[in-house]
Image (tube, rainbow, N blue to C red; front, side, top):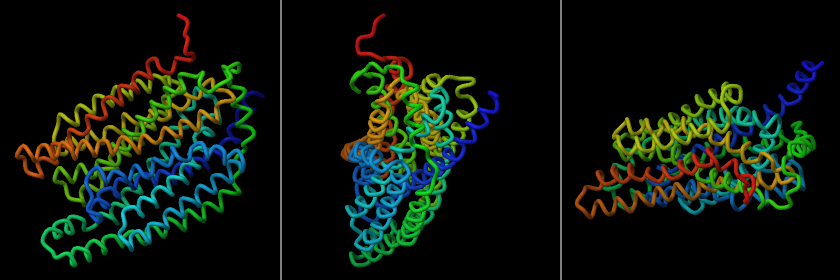
Length: 443
């Protein structure tokens, strides 16, 4: 009888898991094309490093603006309609790229990216807590790891496809820019900008179709709410501010998303700065994502049967510190490989933080989930900080007599120092931060 009930439970959750995995695939595809967009935008709009990383900011800042409103929207219209709306909004954002390319206007590109981010916020606000509490919290990291596999495989595909489209001929264009007239330069850059037309129109159409199809998806919202209440450990608490492990978890997720975006979105530009061609560098984001997929697979096998979620988080943070130091201490393709290796360090951080942070929130789980979604804004703050460090160091080194090319290599490498304090905080959360359930802890 018990085995029969378990089989029934697995059948009841299989379809929702497949649907949510599909959604993770979609926003993985859309999110990870930023690695190709950053050098593309830098070239066609003639930007500094710091300005080019606003591509990541425009996407991730939407999670701050929309996380709590998204939670309100989902309460009003439900998960299924909310996900449908999110996909349609993402499609609208993709359409904005067409006039942005026609005008070659950077702020209009950023607007399209921001609108897509708004749609992704709706999807993430629904999908992450749903998959976390679809089964026991102690195996939440395993389920999120499965979602991560879908997300990163999609990201690798998106990076390869859009890298091939957007970065094709970028080295030739950059080589000509310094020796052509202003009119010829505008023609070159306009022609390069037009390459976004077909892929983004196709993306918009696919998102609109999926937005219509998801309305019929069987996602049982009520059962989720009941399970949240059943898992409550602190039902006597009256305020979200009474959960220190939640707030520390939000900060841990904030810095984590920042380092994950740096690992995926800077590696192509970093490779180009080291002298690799755009044709060679377009594959580098895929290295990072495939490292994540391999580690996700390990997580699915090992958690929670062989290792605890907190142990996975400790190991990930420690590896992040080691790999960050190795990036700075090496050169050339070896340094690139250590940036890609951050995918190993990053893969199990997101899956582990969610269940560790949501554990014991009870009726505050929805609000806690919205706060965790807001923490995704780390991807808006930390990558431009990396870019700013690169710009400042580059100018200082040029002032000291280094050539522009050499200064760019040194400053791009040293910018990765920003990763070490981020991983150090994640390590703190893994060791003790997630255990702090009250502001006045009794020994």
